[in-house]
Length: 115
Image (cartoon, rainbow, N blue to C red; front, side, top):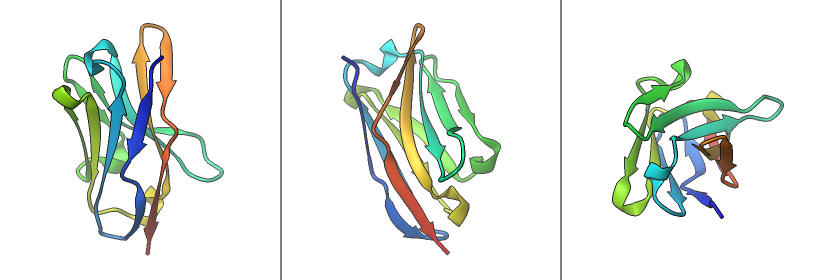
């Protein structure tokens, strides 16, 4: 059973920072990719950033230069450092992972950015 557990969300003022963590059960290298996604009220879930098993990284244009995805292999954890947060970053942030043809999701963590 694959488990992804997110933590680190909260309420922050615009311009502030938060770091999200996604702890995976098992070796994160067993996944093709691990990423962060977000879903704002009334909107579809969107990709924020992904890190592939080989190390390549992708970011949504809206977060480039502000967010950084990284991983700690020893802790089987993927992080999302979010700096210079904006009110439009407010959403539930989900950790997602792919392995072969299967997708796995965490329960989500709320990020709220006040103006």
